[in-house]
Length: 295
Image 1 (cartoon, rainbow, N blue to C red):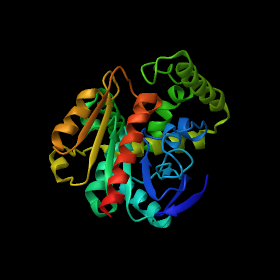
Image 2: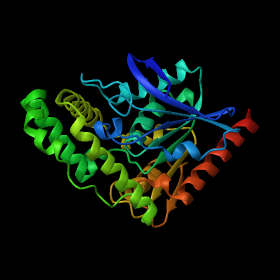
Image 3: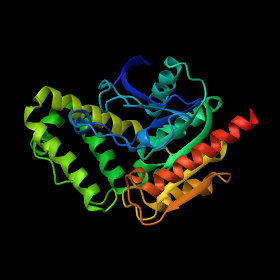
């Protein structure tokens, strides 16, 4: 994947397609070693017709193949990274799609840089995931514990668990045997790679992930949703237990002009569902066609 230094961060990115309309995709998760030494192809890279849409995907700081930043940062920094990358690529305006935790980055981006956003897509996300979800509460506690102990002491206290991670959750993605086998293979690849990761690298991956946890703490976009003026599309699985469907419904209520697509029976990792991918593709193509007609 190509690399660029944006906002002072060495950033890995990928550009798919050569269409006149640009989609910026902001991935979810919190990075860490499982995203860095085990790669997983992003479903969004196959969704849009390449002759009509240019899709820009990138690894957020402290995730994937991008630089791990161990100094604290906040959501505005993550949004600035995305804006700087598009600037580096010569892109002024784009459709912005944020997936899961990336949805909060996309909300920050749309509020800071509305002049650069033609439309906003919010995929399986919410306005304040760190406060409203049980796992968000747990991650806030981890951030506080690391701050209290200091990075090295915290890492030492967690190293045995990090070297022997828990069994993978099976409540994400389509429930087909093929999809679940793919997830299991990815988890096994992570377990197989872990013994060869040095303590120094594991420290970097772990603390980078915790910096990502910390970046989201304290942000609640609920009171600001009405400020969004661009077209907004919310898509969510109805049986998502990671980011429950009601969070998507709350986004839709808070953005009166938004559209809401409920994907029946879908769990987290929504874009792995063909019907969700098709719905997102149709919205993007409809949105860019309207923009072309208006322009």
